Amino acid sequence: MAAAHDATPIAAARPAPDGVDPKAFHRRIMIGIVVLLALLPLGVYPIFLMKVLCFALFALAFNLLLGFGGLLSFGHAAYFGMAGYVSAYAAKAWGLTPELAIASGTLAAMALGLAFGALAIRRQGIYFAMITLALAQMVYFFSLQAKFTGGEDGIQGVPRGRLFGLIDLSDDRVLYAVVAVIFTAGMLLIYRVIHSPFGQVLKAIRENEPRAISLGYRVNRYKLAVFVISATLAGVAGSTKAIVFQLASLTDVHWSMSGEVVLMTLVGGMGTVFGPIVGAFVMIAMESYLAPFGAWVTIIQGCVFVVCVLTFRDGIVGMLGRIIRRPL
Picture 1 (cartoon, rainbow, N blue to C red):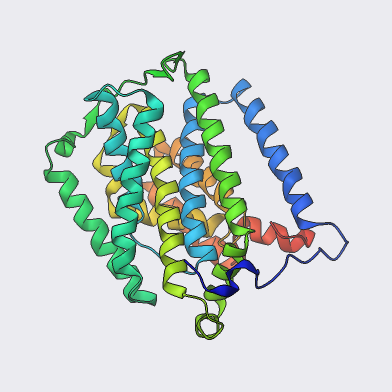
Picture 2: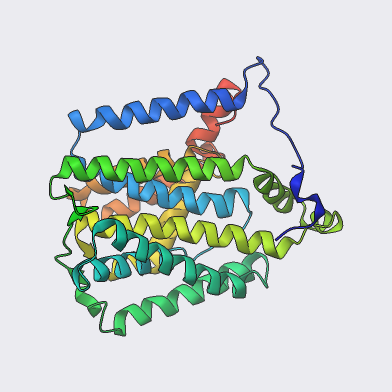
């Protein structure tokens, strides 16, 4: 998938001004996140936490494509939503166990990402974004008409089942533990991709694509690879969400879902490691706790987005990173 240069990273991580190794600092943050995930269910509703974790993984996957690959997709809901449909159908109609249902949805998202990515990477900039949006709309109308998706009703009453045929997931706290493990695994995988030689090449392509080409890198292969990885991880998030809420609906493949994940990424901090997690928490918390305001929730979210863009253009976590002078 790459030229002879691929074994050598373009840039190595530089130590912070105070001499602290960024990777060591990130490890501490990840340990803190794991501890927080273990403690939060003691005082916070597990369903809310699982929703946050599913969307946080979705936002992390999208940030890998946009923040580190420099590719703006307006159609990521296609992989998130279609994976949810396949996972829900596999669990309900085929009677697959939760792990196999999630794997089925993930594979569907990966296949869809490979097909759509091969078409989309042929164009750049706004044309790339418009192609992804058009392809995602095709998925939406397919989901609306296909029999297995249930049309406007979606797939309801999806059984949570037993993990590996042993662990009953009907208990919210048990299911939360499974979702937390999936989220942590996805976060670590994305972190590894970002800090690998592959990730360094992605950053080089994002910053100066013509120069990366001149150095011998097969840019389109890298773009397709990161597109597929991002779509696959978005599929993991969508599949998991379908099992958690026992539902797959048109909402998850609608274009507004693609816009929502863009907002999560920008509010949290595009191009940061942990920003999308914070962005997902902020957006989901507003949806949940401001629900009494009805349609005004969307307006409030828009105002928050405008304030974030005007006040701290690097997002919440990007601003914190500048304050403490450490990469987040």
